[in-house]
Length: 62
Image 1 (cartoon, rainbow, N blue to C red):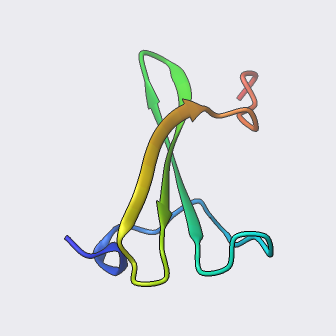
Image 2 (image 1 turned 120 degrees about the vertical axis):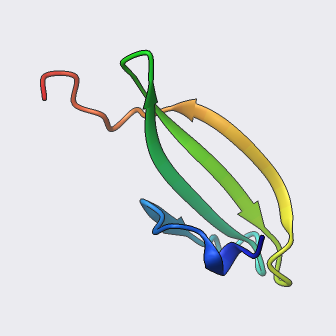
Image 3 (image 1 turned 90 degrees about the horizontal axis):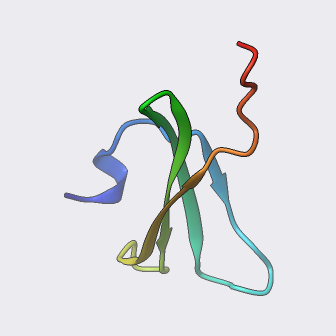
């Protein structure tokens, strides 16, 4: 499935030291824990890497 077909991402980042890379992050929760699904695309929109990390910006008091 192409990256442009996915649901809206929570955050899109590009970094000057990594030209051609685009980082997309999606928020989700599992077992009441806030997580982020992270994908790094190259300039051709091919997936370079993926990761699941803790959502450090999640407010646990919500």
